[in-house]
Structure formats: C-alpha cells, structure tokens
Amino acid sequence: MKTAEIMANLAAKHPGENEYLQAVQEVLESIEEVYNQHPEFEKAKIVERMVEPDRIFTFRVTWVDDKGEVQTNLGYRIQFNSAIGPYKGGLRFHKAVVPSMLKFLGFEQTFKNALTTLPMGGAKGGSDFDPVGKSNDEIMRFCQAFMTELWQCIGPDQDIPAGDVGVGGREIGFLYGMYKKLAREYNTGVLTGKGATWGGSILRPEATGFGALYFTQHLLHKAGKDIAGKRVALSGFGNVAWGAATKAKQLGAKVVAISGPDGVCEIPDGITDEMIAYMLDMRASNRNKVEDMATKFPEKAKFTAGKKAWSVPCDIALPCAFQNELSEDDAKELQKNGCWCCCEVSNMGCQPGAIHYFQNNGILFAPGKAVNAGGVATSGLEMTQNASHISWSAKEVDDKLHFIMESIHEQCVKYGTQPDGHVDYVKGANIAGFMKVATAMLEQGII
Ligand code: 2IT
Image (cartoon, rainbow, N blue to C red; front, side, top):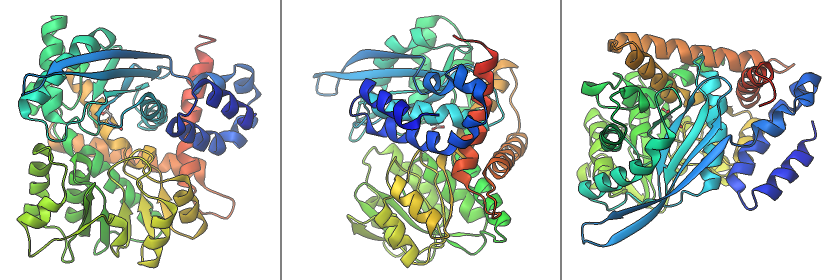
C-alpha cells in the first residue's frame, strides 16, 4: 500500500482538514502490513475508496432566538460507508463543528460499528450551533429547524442518527418530534437514544460509559489486574463521563477527578452517587462549567481553573470529552503522577504523540473506537427492539452489551497480539474493523 501517496492525495482533496487526515493516517499505519498480504484489496482500490465519504449533505439552518433575533447555522450529515449496513452515527452540536471534524468522526464510526458485531455502516452529522447558554426553547427551535432539512437524508433503513457531544435525550426528542411531523412516518427506528416511553432502549444513556468500563475490565484482567480500589481520573462531565463514573464506582474504583472547559474538580475521597446525579443537572443547565460541582459540594470537590484532569494523580485515565484532549505532555504528566493505564473513551481523545508515549513507556492503552463502541452498539440494540416492536429488560440489554464489549476485546487481542505477546490495541481494533469492512466492500463489487 502506498500510504504516503494516498495521504498526499487525500490532503490535496481535503486541504487543511487535519483531524480527518490524522484519523486516516492512524488507521493506514495500523493496517499496512495486513493490506499488503491481500493483493485483491489493492486491485479493488479498497483503501482509496474507503477513505472518502459516500456522500455529504450540507444545509443552512435558520432559527429565531429568545430575543427575537434571526440566527443562521450550518448543518451537515456525512454518510461515510454502507458496506456492512445502513448509515449509523451520532449528531454533534458544538461551535467548533466543521466538515473535517465530522469526516474524522464518520471515518472512525465506520470501523467502530464494524467492531460491534452488528450490521451498521458509518455516518456522522451535526452543526456549529453552540448549545452553551441556550434556553430550552432555543434548543427546541434549533432542533426543529435542523430537522426540516435533515429528514430528507435519513430513514430507519437508510441512515439512523443518534446523539454525540451537545446532543442527548432532550435533543433527540425534539428532533424526532419534527421528523414525525414532516415525514408522516411513525417508525421510531429513524433515531436512537430516544426516551424510554417512546421507543428508547433501556440503558442507552449509560451505554457508552458502561461499555467503556466493561472493556477496561477485560483489558485489565488480560494484564492480570483489576479495577477495584483503583483511582480513576476522567475528563468531561457530560453523558459519557456520567456513565463512566457510575460504572467505575459500581465496580469499586474511586473517581478522583472530573473536568470541563473551565478546569478540573479534584475529588480526593472519590465521587459520590449524589455528585454523579448532579452531573446530569450540570449538563441540562447548558452552562458548561465543571466548577458548578465544587460550588454544590464544597467539602468534597476542589476546583482549579485552567487545569486538566490529567494533572490529578491516578491509576487509570479515561478521556471522556473531546478529540485531541490529551497531549504528549499530558501523557508524561500522567505517568509521573502514577498512571499506568489509559482507555480512550472520547473519539480520538489522545493526540498521536500521547498514544506513542503510552505505547513506548509500558502504559496500557486502548483506542476510542474499541472502548466507546458500547454506545453505538446499544443504539443497534435499540434499532432491533424498534424493528420488532418490543422492549427488552435492563438485564437483557446489559447482558448483550457485556457480550459485545467482550467480543470487541477478543477481536483486539486476535488482531493486535504482537510477537512478544503484548497486545497492541490500536492495531488490533483498526485491523479487525478494516478486515470486516474491506471484505464486505470487495464482495459487493466496484460501486
Ligand atoms: O461516537 C459515537 O459512537 C456516538 N456518538 C454514538 C452513535 C450512535 O449512533 O449511537
């Protein structure tokens, strides 16, 4: 495979789209050796086709804010790859959303979805709409305006969006309400992450965080360790961090840090159930300030402005916020402070320098597309429940999520075990996901 040539080509076609190029580069580096053992992939130009999205929809979203002022945002849906199933992936509402970000997320989603064992292709979408400081009514009006364009691109058998950063159960509710009105179609399977009373799967809100902790447990057991009693530092305080904190505590770990764009809250005695519940209020407030935790629980949490979660001594680091949130310097600081394991829960949360540092310094590391796949996997389970007009119990969903995370871990071990016996989880996840998508593309001909 001519990695340099493919990358140069991609950079010329997508100038300045650094996050997208970073995500592709990481996968190509991992799969090069395997790819070269399959001349049929080269002949069908699998990689050249796989790195480009199938199609991109871009649209204007105009809405009126609480002051009566007209606001215009950009909306996108990127349908990346449908080799193994209908397009599937979240919607991100964040002020920094640009096509590069959604292309990287759609590309990652394709491989992640392949790892889940379920038949789902890859997609991503969203808007540069900034939810920070917005009222509930403004969120609703924006979601409705967004859906007046998006509805034509999606469908329960074509493309099934869900949440991501800035999009949770509330937003999915507003989006579904408008979809129904426009499409006159009452199939709840068009979106996942819905409310529990109208087609949502039990445990979907928790699933990304729960799945991440199940994966972390498997990784630790393989290394002869256990999570009980360990100190966990996690970044963010949104839906994913909330699920991760809940399960980490249930498994006997001590969550000693959460963070936000404003700084870090250190929690020396470990997070309590009350504090975990308060994370939900913090998200719903749209203030985007982790300091609120220390204001509410001054005896338990100490806020430091401008610092990251990675400055707090811990055993296990769980990035749960945003891409590239953990740099090589952060990786060094973590190790200096006693950290020996990092499971990436956010999509591409670690910069390449941080990943290389972890891997070269004996720190256990697993990438987001394996660790966080429990979220989209449970979306897949929600689709199955919707299609068969039933809802499963919490136990049934949790058992399936457990099975899926175990299977993802096994795939990483199968494809990532190195000659010296250690597991390269980055290689393992990328090769396992690639082989599945590439084989499907090959079997479906040149399209
Ligand atoms: O990054 C992700 O996997 C998600 N935001 C969840 C996507 C989904 O379709 O549930």
